[in-house]
Amino acid sequence: MSDVAYDEDFGDQPAVDPGDIAALNDVRPVPRISVQAFCETEGVAAPIGRMGEDRRMAKAQTRVYMGGIPAAVEFYQSAPTPNLIILECSATPDILFKGLNDLAEVCDPNTKVVIIGHHNDVTLYRELIKNGISEYIVAPVTIAEMMNVVSTLFIDPDAEPLGRSVAFIGAKGGVGSSTIAHNVSWAVSTLFQAEVLIADMDLPFGTANINFDQDPAQGIAEAVFSSDRIDEVYLDRLLATCAEHLSLLAAPSMLDKVYDFDPDAFSQLLDVAQRTAPYVVLDVPHVWNGWTRRTLEQADEVVIVASPELANLRNAKNIIDTLRKLRPNDAAPRLILNQVGMPKRPEIAVSDFADPLDLEPIAVIPFDAQLFGTASNNGRMLAETDAANPIVSSLSNIAHLVTGRGVVKEKQKSGLKGMLAKLKKK
Image (cartoon, rainbow, N blue to C red):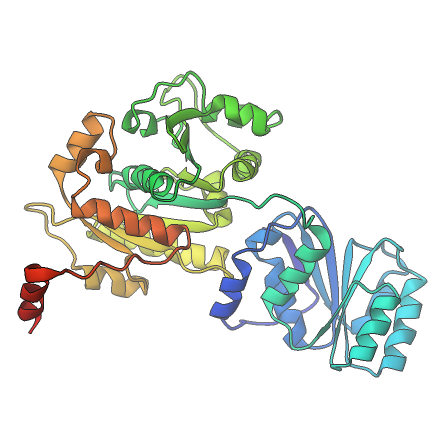
């Protein structure tokens, strides 16, 4: 995460408002900048500190100090100024402008300054902007407001929009996370006619090439081991085409070398991938190390696939609790229960599985060895194998949810079938 420091402890802060989470969904990651805030009240310092911990500020360095403008003037007499200074001031306009004049004498002229004031005064706002202040905000402030200000100041408004990244991970090995990820990718590409890029991140044992009946000579290994060369053109050469709107960055699935990576080994690749396709699906292996943690931390959406048994419940809870701490300004991960109703296997009821997680599953997929086995052995997707199967409808619902389109409402049954269904309900 970003380097966030405080000159005092603010204690436990309340959970982020759901409105803030929704407002932050479209905020782009901030470039490598330095941000320093000088606040007068905890109510302003706390959201700025939380902003600095946000995954979209991962490249930035954010520091929060108390003392307002006087503390800033004293601090910069012996310290270099950052890219952005945020100042809280509750004083009258005359005292505010005097403090800004003192700050100008010790501040780099290229540094951007944002003022958080306590006076809702249009005349004051215009005068501050006229004197070179980048923005004036009236307290109280929210994380979403601060993130939008920072992104507006440092992100090119004409930049191409970034693709949405969706990371799938299994609560335990063998629960079908990869299969669900591949089929949801297929659903997104076919339902919405949108370009989807799948990255199989399980380099030694990945199955995407088998599931899509592909045997590319190159793939994700070349991208990771040559991260300094990776750009849109190079990435395009590594992609295998699975369908009209679906591309695969395949894993080598070989054990001729070990795959030990630094936490940021995949960061450049994922940045380029998100500039290449509107949807990037990350098939994350069931391991816990620096780069898998960083991948889940930085993804726009995280989906956990689990089977209804005790080890899955324990692992799912650990992952969800960890991600809630790593991603305080994001919605909770999505949960899919897979392989439900496996013959002769004792299972935890869906409601009993969901309660400890404080998370309702977005899909409950029944065990169907015939459907999944046939599709896998033929290198085909479930929709290609049996388009009328209810499981395919569940995958379509998942595709709508992870792309931000909401849940698909079931069509009302008509005619005799509809009448019978209503009678059964009565």
